[in-house]
Image 1 (tube, protein in one colour):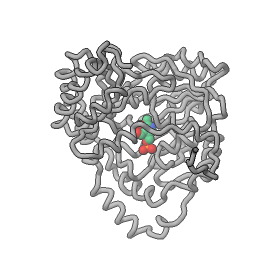
Image 2: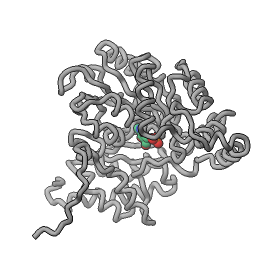
Image 3: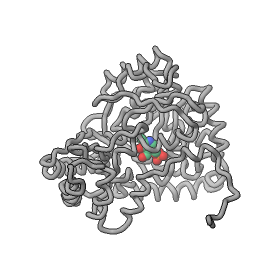
Image 4: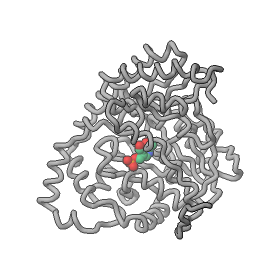
Length: 407
Ligand SMILES: Cc1ncc(COP(=O)(O)O)c(C=O)c1O
């Protein structure tokens, strides 16, 4: 007899498409002490400009407490929108502040775009691999995924022309800068070729750029959106340059789409915290980021170097390979001989190191032999031990599957 209680709650069909984030599940495991996490996409808390945020918060509460604690416009806090437009202009892209919409993290921008642009069955192009959170955000709107063929420079322009679902892509979701998870950077020539092709075919581009400021040696080429005009929506975020706890991101969209996104946001949360927006504006208005970012870049670069050095020592002899990212937070590692990263993960956590298996980042079941390592949070001094532990797990993997192949 089945005694399982029957719920009176009938879930909407779209909930079947909500995927648990394996990253968050792993993060729970790594909360126990002794595990070095190369898994999460968290920025290093050591680089949060805590004092500057504290002073800005005090100023907001002293000078504008009642405005800051009141409801606010959906579009966002005017001076912050102007600051963002001016910041984008320093990179050579002129955008009217009226086209900027402040969002509750760029994650919300992804959800709003799904709501406004994706019908059931719409062909949505994604890189392989791509950001898991974007897959989660779009999935409930029931897209037909189209995996865009990529090389080391990013998606191939011709891939925009071949949606397997037929018709034109409803949108292509791209991260040109230090992509999550591959760490890949799209060179300027590829950007121009992709935008030319997208404009020719009428494929709208969604450009997600949370990592662009985290370059190590030279800033990336201008955004796709600067080349594509009204053919692209651009997503930015304060999470990796200031602090993710503020939950502040933004999008830049052409006027008619912007208006729809504002309506969708009204329904979602009325507006992003006006208090946080004012604090962020007070924090950055006098050039804090220009003073602060060099230290962030230097720290991440040193941590990348420590990770790459450890990979060379420990994983090269085992036949692994990886990307050496020129910025951002992630390194993408391929395992030798059919080893399965999902299968290795519990053994790695038991040995004191965590990573994200590559399969999380594919819509079509690929990526089993890959893993994402983040070099942002683990201090350089612990990197060698963490990678040594990982090497131990990889070395023993064939003995767990005597054929040498994971199941
Ligand atoms: C590619 C990408 N897009 C968007 C986000 C969401 O960032 P947030 O909502 O904190 O702005 C992340 C977070 O890691 C990311 O890696």
